[in-house]
Length: 109
Image (cartoon, rainbow, N blue to C red):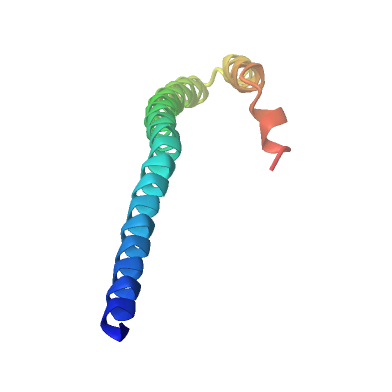
């Protein structure tokens, strides 16, 4: 009789272990079903952010070279003795930078 008790207890333990394993599998599938779309969405957002950063870098680089060219023109005008032209170019440069809103964005840090 004690052999039967031990066998039935062993069978119960086996059933409980199988049920626990099945429950864990179901829970794993549920979590994967929820987390997978979130992870994919985050990856897409990261790619978009990287593209935007690349575009902003290109834009900033081009604007930098525009400012350098304008300053070179102002320097050339000053070297030729055209102070009024130099003043106008510098004022135009300040207006150009102000038109981009750089002054407002600098204060938001």
